[in-house]
Length: 142
Image 1: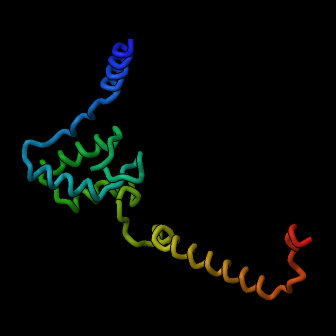
Image 2 (image 1 turned 90 degrees about the vertical axis):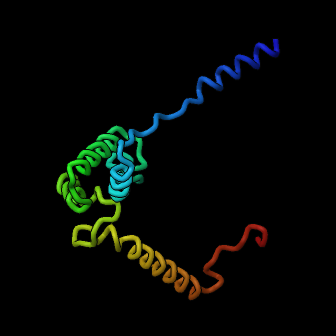
Image 3 (image 1 turned 180 degrees about the vertical axis):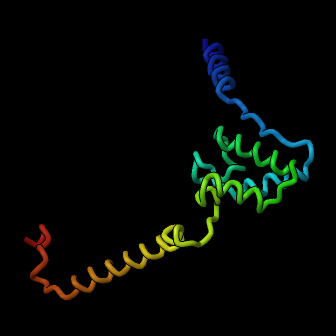
């Protein structure tokens, strides 16, 4: 009975452990390397935290195939990036350029950090100026 239960568990284990399909590779390794370099510069529009090269989303697969076709056609990396940017905007670039429209994206985290530190220091300074009787006593002292 125990062996039968163990065999059933092993069958379930092997049934759930499936390998993912390998990405389609071009017949030319140089072409594939160029395609991977270009897709590493493009953000997956579905995942948003992965490059097209890393993503398994259907849209990313389609965009990889499109980039592969463009590379086969002889388009340069800049032409492909320009095409994708014209079609999807600067958001598709994993490292968007610094422009007026992307300034908040580039400098926003630093501004928020400085603002947070300023608020923190203001609270500490205000609190240090308060007298001891302004604070509530601990319940153990009462």
